[in-house]
Image (cartoon, rainbow, N blue to C red; front, side, top):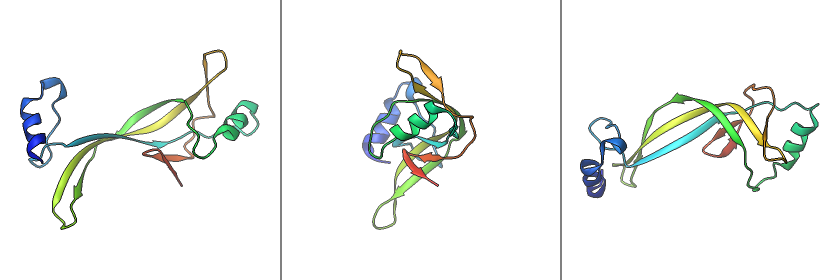
Length: 124
């Protein structure tokens, strides 16, 4: 843990204090997402959504999920010494909503896990 991180941890208000792991303070915090929903190929709105998901295009959706894990990870420097410690919360997606033209949203698919998203990158 860096001197700056250590000093910040000592002066941090209770509301933002983070847990220690094996006597080390946390340098970063991160949320990861996994899971997804299966789209209905017979639903024109789901098909339109899929066609609108173009590589590199920014999209807005609301997801609902459950916290599935709360691990820590540690980065090592080029000499193999421990460095930055990150506290991670992993959220498994259970439901997804897409915006509808009138400012409301509609539920997507049938909530079966199919596509995995980890840190915003699609994986299979």
